[in-house]
Picture 1 (cartoon, rainbow, N blue to C red):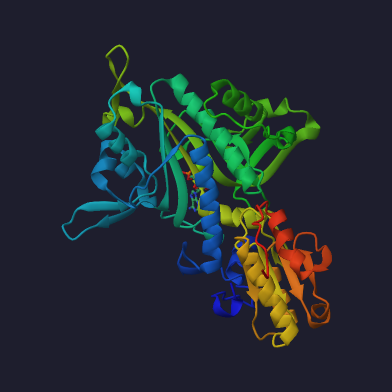
Picture 2 (cartoon, rainbow, N blue to C red; picture 1 turned 135 degrees about the vertical axis):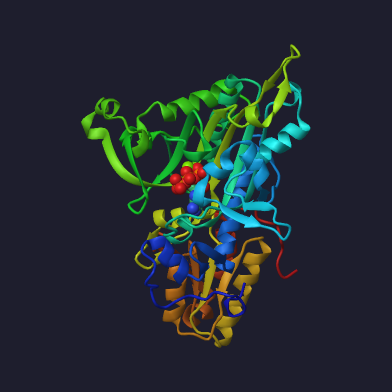
Length: 453
Ligand code: ATP
Ligand code: MG
């Protein structure tokens, strides 16, 4: 992509309203534009990152055996009256009236709707277990939207709903989600710690929140530092293996880690003093088991092998996809700008032409750009008529993990410079070695394209 033809409205000034780094940097890097309190447009660069995170979240859910679908953003109030949540949800729910004076709402979550779908189509234990999920915009009329996309009113969420015959089966769904979430955050280059939490208006018995530790986080958490040393076993996870999922979930949840709301001083006191930690965190996901809370009042029954009709056991499981964009930046930036983890970067690398208009330099940049594209990778080529300094500053703010700098001196002998945004390490190499090197970094199979034949 040529920057001269792209839409990247980078801001020179630091916007006054942004108090945390991720909000500031997302505005400065031209990723988002606020349209109303807590409501944002996702400009092209931000949209790319959002889509990459969505893709990873989706892939990991499918890997765990969960089935994607899509429910609407607008729901009928009547459905929410069945579960008694229409009034209970309070002022956070955006209520809407259509031209026929029918009561609608912009969905803050989808338990009622999925329970309605289930009761319409599933009647037998033979169709269980079942987990359906979607990734869709939600609206919650937050009293204090802030920190950019981290606490928006409109936000993008993956919400999945599990259906099982028994509590025991439902606990497998719970553990399976816990493991798949850990796997998801790891792929996103984040460490998120599962912590015992309180259920809130969704209601439930068992629930864990996933927190990314960050000074700017809104949650206060207490944990045993040993929990940050546990690693997901890199062996292939078999999501149908009940014992394996349970074992992994237990490894993580047996260590003391709780949000402020469920913090227990007595239990915390048993953690060795030098491992006790109180910190701030960003909630990037939550899993709930809530049994028959919705299936009973809404009549979502299934027939057991004995012919009895019983309410199905449910859980709901959410990942804050749009909040993750902010959380990743909070975890990965420096004073100059964003540092994208390779897994979610909007472009694989940047190309900087330090002397636009110099024939040799332009030609080498074009070649590099094409060579990278040909490998199925994407480069953002800064071909603007700008000073080199301005190009470097833009590159620092938008934070692509790899930068190729091409100048007239090196161009004479076909040499360019490859620099890591994270470490600042630089390496001089021949232009034709760049595309294969980038492909190797990203683990992309090289196509055996024979050039100039
Ligand atoms: P919070 O306590 O932060 O208000 P919640 O517990 O009410 O969140 P859930 O119902 O658990 O939220 O939603 C699942 C996930 O959606 C959360 O873990 C979070 O990552 C994300 N999320 C919730 N509210 C918002 C919001 N206002 N803006 C952006 N993401 C959000
Ligand atoms: Mg939550």
